[in-house]
Image (cartoon, rainbow, N blue to C red; front, side, top):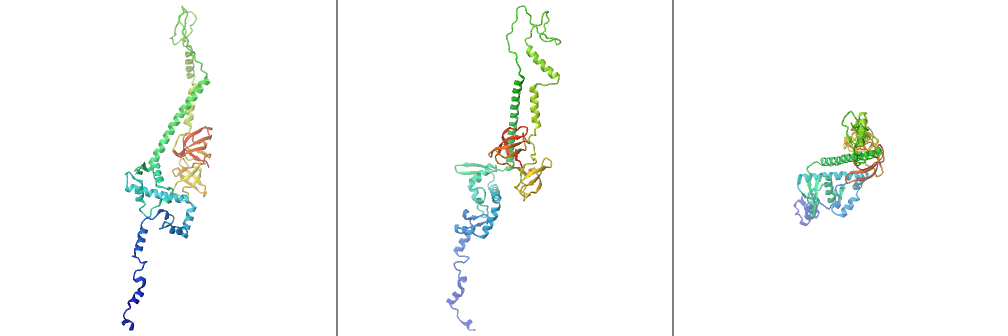
Length: 403
């Protein structure tokens, strides 16, 4: 009862409330706490962001502390198992998100690439560029131009990009079709040149001696007659006396020889050579829509097969024209897959390849050089009908590494 009537001591009251009652320095509504929450909402420096842990540090000291933490060390062990796959995954997500933002915000508009990038990174949870395979924005913009996904233009004010409405797969298909048409045209020119060279060699072997043209001379009193009767030989005169010489004797003999060969069912040497060359050309398998062959190394592109995606294997046998049975190199599993889900593999310089499509299909060759600009290679055939032939330019899709 005594303590109820006691008057409250102002000093004691304030002492009992303590820091909770009077909002100390670490309170929720203090200026420092508000400033910290504002900083946490906004973007921080990119060099202090850890993509694997998805953690943003405010300063260098905090980033160093994060690097030594146990959670970060576990994430780095996961990254060390397959770094290429993780970086490629981040790159694909970054590219797709960037193109989606460009398509929705600036469709068919020529705009500065820096402006689009600044709008894209306004989202705090975006995939940062330092975790992709592109180190700078310029490198990424050049990639978009080379892949045909954007129209890229370099100006004094910087790089400008325009989103392409057409599907990139259709653009790549058109480019490959144009290269294929040029390749087929060069094959026809090569065939014509080969036929001409064989014709020259045939003419030299035949040793055809042409009669030289001479001045027509006749003695006085000599009668020159031309036999037009089909029953008589050309050059036999109607006048009594010895037969006179014919001016067209050489041409007559050549014509008679050709007629006799045609009548007997024989053909000239030039015609035979041309027919042999055409038969050889027709006998070869021209470009077709299937390319799988047993014994070649291929890469699996089917995302449904997660355990074998982007892994290599050897084709054991072909079930028809378009389906192959592939034995995976890493696991030894045998899978049955369509050729649309497979990709050819290019070996190192000096490696052996099989020509799987085109003019020299089925022949084995050695890889001498590659050209990454137009995705072509130079090979030398060492086994097949054209052994010793050097093909200066052949598409990557027409050759494949031998298993």
